[in-house]
Amino acid sequence: MSITGTLIVQMIVFLILVGFTMKFVWPPIAKALDDRAQKIAEGLAAADKAKVALSEADKRVEVELGKARNDSAQRLADAERRAQAIVEEAKARATEEGNKIVAAARAEAEQQAVKAREALREQVAVLAVKGAEQILRKEVNPAVHADLLSRLQTEL
Image (tube, rainbow, N blue to C red; front, side, top):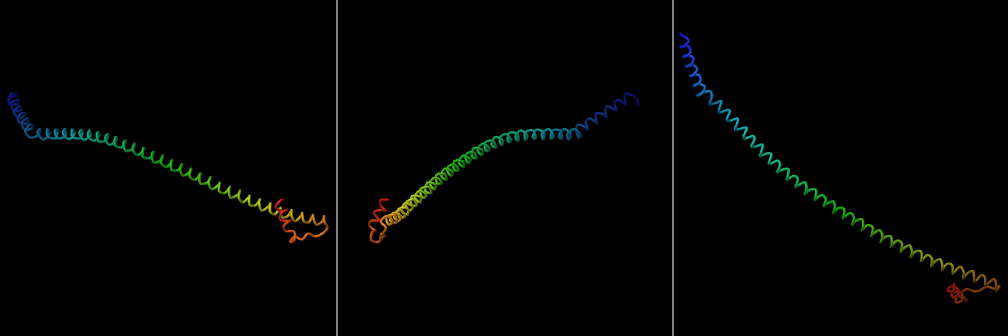
């Protein structure tokens, strides 16, 4: 065979190979490439959707955190107000109780002072009678002179 014949036979074999490849090999490869491109596009779209959803979720979380912070600040303020009111009430009760104790102590001191004055008056009356006895050199009968002794006690 000559070179021309060989070339013609090689061209025919090559064309048959190209036709076979175009008919049976290329379509599955092209289909696989198209499927892969479609999956990549779907993945990118899903990633974009996820990014948007994430940003929306972040916004919602920030809003909820803001509400929670405001709520906790409000509760703390209420608790502080309640604590302050309780402290003020306790102070008022303590002051009132202290005033009662002071008033009771003053009343008791006054009673003791009155009792001490009465006891002192009695002692002075007894001393006055003894002094008068010694001056007069005779005994003074307390039963007979009770009126005189009570007047002396009230004057003192």
